Length: 96
Image 1 (spheres, rainbow, N blue to C red):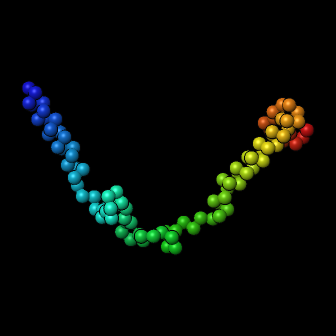
Image 2 (cartoon, rainbow, N blue to C red):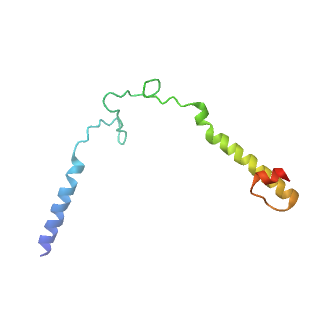
């Protein structure tokens, strides 16, 4: 009975290992460095029609929002130091 179980486990393991041995079509330059472009794509993207050419305004949106957040927090802290109470809504701080 054990022999039959071991044989079944070995057969199942062999069947699962077969796809791992298949050639995936990549040519590795070194171990773990197997990236290659799809056919028709250039090796380097910069300067080609596939280059996204990001708009600097779009790239700076997060930095601008962080600066605005820090300015609101500065106003909140200043108002809290003056009044002794923390007000979250910055528009209410400006009204005081």
